[in-house]
Length: 80
Image (tube, rainbow, N blue to C red; front, side, top):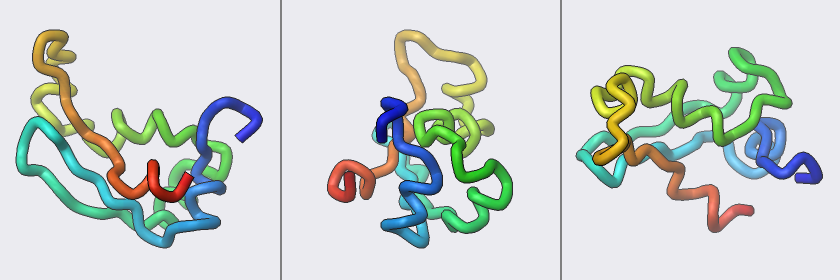
């Protein structure tokens, strides 16, 4: 993590699926890390996944400043 952020390659070394949740609504799910690698590449920064995986979230689309999208990855803090 010398670049200052976690990459998809680093996530793939520890997880096969990535749990995705929102702390503002009831949206929950998981995505294949292999699929993300194939679509985005190994060096893709994990923080940028928020915008991609929540692209259809009304809060993300509207860029709500006072009530932003709360998408996060619950497994990552315990793994890194």
